[in-house]
Length: 268
Image 1 (tube, helix red, strand yellow):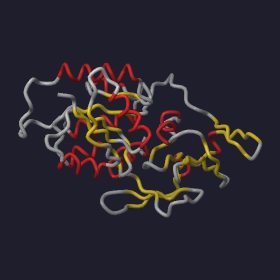
Image 2 (cartoon, one colour):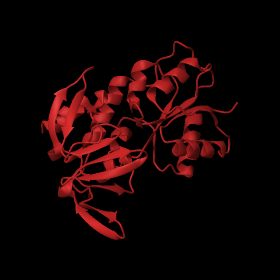
Image 3 (cartoon, helix red, strand yellow):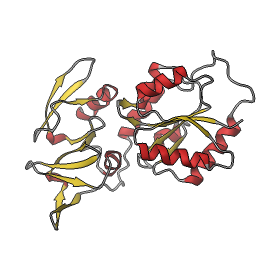
Image 4 (cartoon, one colour):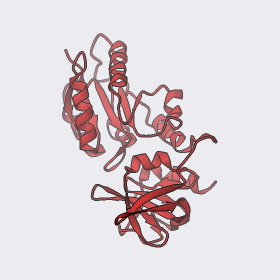
């Protein structure tokens, strides 16, 4: 029987591309669904019987970090994370023997991952009482390691080139307050209150910017520390940040899963 997979990915094009590559495998993999959020993935896992043989899981989803999935439902099948994090941050995954595929996913690497998965699979189906695939505590620790793993030799961007009409303008890093996504576009917000479209996704920017200076507050905002003017306690153990210049969104909240990492980042 073919392997059955669930692709948890909030970028439809990326999900479709991965599904197409799985269909082209020497032994095609059947895709049961492509939920875009933790909530959708929880609902599918609870309703799909038998469950998937493998979960392809993006780290950042529409409603938070995918690690929350393991706190809300027992995942007993193997998981392969798909991520845009740079190679150095991924050392945290390697040390803890967690499988991952770096975006954009290479088809040969996907084939190797599926082959390895088949070799590891038990001959008999796992009982409903089988142990969960991952310890949520371990995954939270992995996320923290990925935020903090930055070798001294890593080179980060120091400026961005943006378009102004028919002209190009260089914006040094010191003049950037934060980046934000809005209506499928990514914007650079300067300290002077101007905004420009940039040709990067938020995930790509997270790997290009020095994590000692910039922090991914949530899926839509990546801020320089100097742009965070105030931090306010919010409901459900979350934090609200006040950015300068004023952000397009009325509330810029730190994802609940990132609150402890955010506090550690501030208290260095």
